Length: 175
Image 1: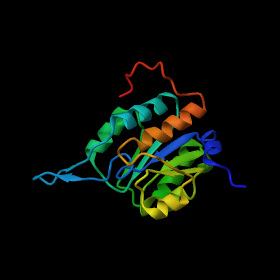
Image 2: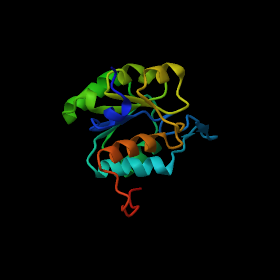
Image 3: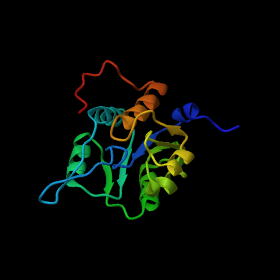
Image 4: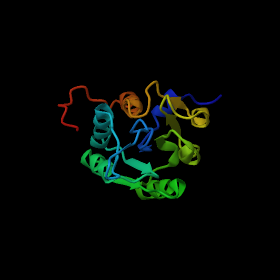
């Protein structure tokens, strides 16, 4: 019998997130100067900061590149940020080796084809509600939230709650 996702939550020791379509809703606004703007949900930021405060390594792994995204994530305490990735599988392997983490103890949230191969290598593959069908098919968990609208918070909060690490007494200074 296949292990259900709630059991897999207990085994998560690290997180990996794509950016566009996961941390953002996938919309890119283009200014007259050609600058690309994205929006991120504040609750996702709160959860990312909470996870880093509890010692969970987090890797942000994206094919896209944006300095604003890097700055925002760095300010949340995320140390492992790879933007402009040309090989997500290789970058994921490097992260696991450097952090001495078994890929089966990683929760990965992706939404589109570039995430497919890495998601198949992780212990808990997940996606936002609005991910493409191919990604939903291989996901152990599909959030009830869309990308950029709390899907990241949903996954992190579930993991931290199951593991007794969700602190409702936090002072809110996470973001």
